[in-house]
Image 1: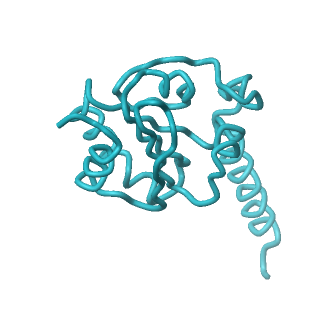
Image 2: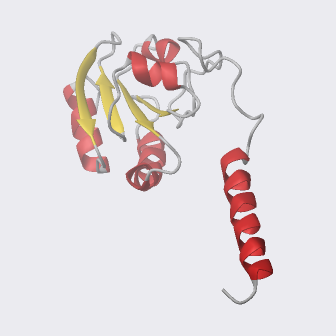
Amino acid sequence: MRNPKWFLAIVVMAVVAVVVVKYTGQGTEDKDQDKPTPRRVSVSTSVLTGADLAAVLKSGRPTMADFGKGWCIPCKMMAPVLKQAARELAGKANVVYVDMEKYPVLAQQHRITIMPTQIFFNARGEEVNRHIGFMPLTDIKAQLRSTGMSR
C-alpha cells in the first residue's frame, strides 16, 4: 500500500460508522423492557408498538399480534398490511405490533423464534393459531373471522 495514512483514515471512518449505527437511538429504550409486561397500556384497534398485550387481550375482541423487528425485511413488508388491517378492522378486532427489540421478554414469553410471527387470539385472549412470515391482508381477515370476529 502506497499511503498508509489513507488506509488508517478509512479504518477509523469504518469503526466510527459501526459505532454510530450500533448506538443510534441509545437512551430511547423502554426502562421496563426486562419486565414481563410493558407499562404502556392501550386498548385500541390501531397498530400498537410495544403495547401491553395482556391488556389488549382483555378487550373482548379477537386479536392478531405481529412480533417483529424494525430491520427485518418481511417485518417491513408487513407494516403497511398491519396499518390497513387496523383501519379496516377497527371496532371488530385488535391488530397489535410488538417490537421484539424493545420487548424481548414479551417475545420470549410467547416463544417467538422466527420473525415476523403473527399470533391470533380469540375474544377470551386464548391463542388459537400462529403464522410465521409475511401474511397478506385477506389471510389476516380470514383468520380473525375464524377466531370469532364479526363480519
